[in-house]
Image (cartoon, rainbow, N blue to C red; front, side, top):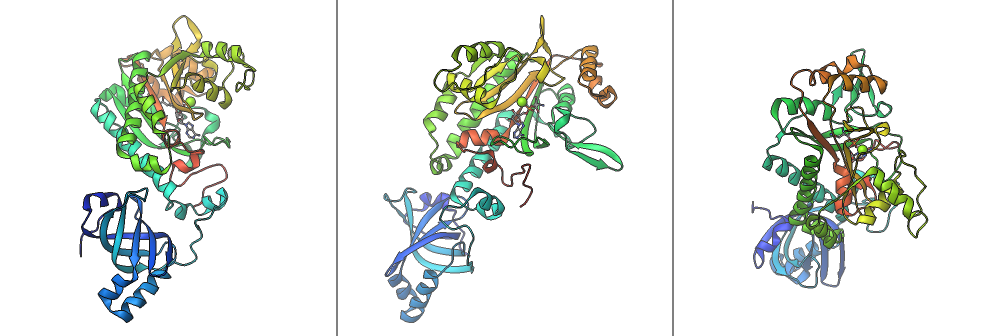
Length: 447
Ligand code: 4AD
Ligand code: MG
């Protein structure tokens, strides 16, 4: 069998006859011509079938029959197509296939997702098929490029991959968002973040990262929330809060650059404004304190576009505040030193101001919201134990975590990035549900 060429690679085969394994995304035709829109997961492009070519190859009767079969192929039929690769300036993709032969592999009829518009619920019910569409392919390619850039950044910067467990005996974040499960007659929880385990890893191996699914039983029905999503956590000893922000900034930039370099076709399919992405790589991110943000929000309240709710110092932001503030700066913005009251128990207080903690949320511009949450961690055994109790948690569940402060406690910091938030931001999509192959939301667990 001839080796198959992937559609994304046809540019390397101009003037050659190649064979492609593909599905028929759409087709149109007139007289002796059929235009097949082929897709193979790597890209979409057009193959042109000219009836006389079939007749020349197979004779009048068989050639005509073959042409008729192709003409009546249903959407999503699978085919091997052999043809000559030609450069074609009229097509957006730049190349076209002059078809010599078509072999049908699997037929398809009444494919539910037609090229017309469909409602979101219908598409989500057919997610297993929706993934085949051009836009979804492009988003998944961007997701892949982000994951690839992520691993590369950490490996290049001295981090070791350290896998944290999914089943856990204690909460990592807010206990109201825990999925509980029965673990041989005892309660266990699905991980909300690998962080606490990663702290143990940092004390054993230095710079560490993990990357895995996490779960939040959040009753949030927004375009930014999933109940199952992928988090990349990183943790590092002997690093201060500011240095931690340097690492995060370099990391986010490396992912954006990685997508620009390795998923240019996908960005083009999505019509993402790449000048914005280039700007985020080239410009330093903004760093601003929570209390300063509150002052700025108050000062601009009521102005055009600033129709957010009034906030006092100590109040948490809603998404309108996050959107406004990140647009105000126009670049990804670290909002630092939030009130301790609405952040997790493990964060270290700001020196001389115990009401505030050494943390930062990275807000993406263009309304994409928080993509990273990070902080410097409490290193003192007694203070940490007190915080655990104050947060209504049982120190017995955290004895192992407290141990990290008993045996050679060191300053350390870390952060967690929500992969799907990052995908949504870089791909420029409206809703997080398209950023993961099979989204899990409050009212959706199928398919
Ligand atoms: O801010 P979060 O809750 O931070 C932590 O879990 C820390 N333990 C991380 C750490 O320090 N290692 O979550 C981190 C990120 C958020 O910034 C956001 O991008 C994403 O995870 N995230 C969600 N993404 C989708 N759906 C949800 N329900 C999310 N909740 C958080
Ligand atoms: Mg957060």
